[in-house]
Image (cartoon, rainbow, N blue to C red):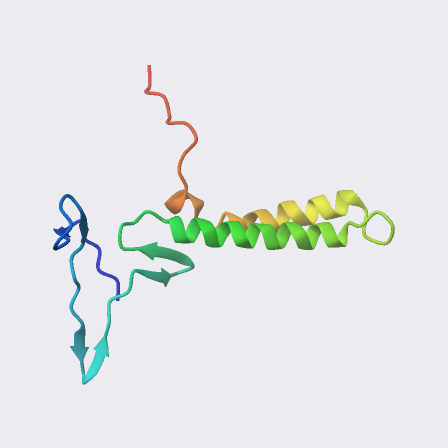
Length: 115
């Protein structure tokens, strides 16, 4: 269970410091459902602040894995030709890294206003 909120409470004994409010456990049919700081839903890791930092780290790890695999396949002495490795990288690695990037990615440039 993920609780999305912007509410914070002061930390006792530490002035000018805050923390997220304490989230209570929910009991459904005698099962305790504890809130978590992040949840994976349809392949995207959502955190309670909707910052997507955990998902971007996850996507970076997947990208590094796929880049390493393509590099292993394209070894100069015994691997496949570089053009096939590049085609594999474009068709497999990039879509795996950038799954749902329109949801969690930050645009590099804001669109200009219409004239």
